[in-house]
Image (tube, rainbow, N blue to C red; front, side, top):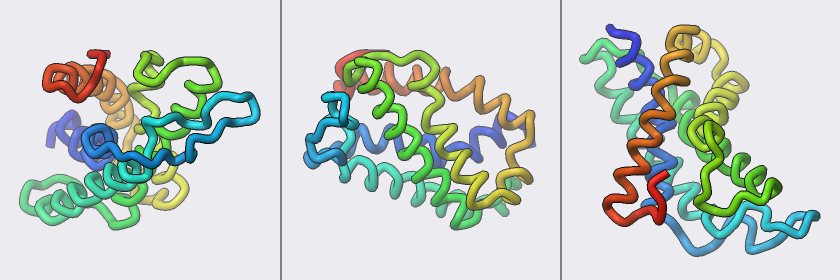
Length: 173
């Protein structure tokens, strides 16, 4: 199996949550509209419970489907713990990034180059490394990690352009 296809396959449960959360949205912000000790919002209105859990569950559900068809296609399979780490880790990574964007004074929707593209990847990998280390090290070789780190910003950019084109994002970056 070509390593680019394997990298994409392994990352799909982490890729879907962010875009799903943007489509699902929600009204109740995770930070309850509260400010941090610096007087700035903790996360902002864009981070909602519905978006967080809805996005993570979309990634998990996709992973369950992939888990079922992996043996027939020759791709690596997932464990339930790996799927939870990939999908919820992606959302946690995005949440942590939002926290730091607020601290740096970067407004919602404004770019934070490379961090915007890799926050969810690093969050997913961190949870995998903590909770499903043997699965992570067996599947995420240096080659697969490198491919994911190169492809993810390109995919993220393309998804943003598409979301802008259909009116789901205010800006294309």
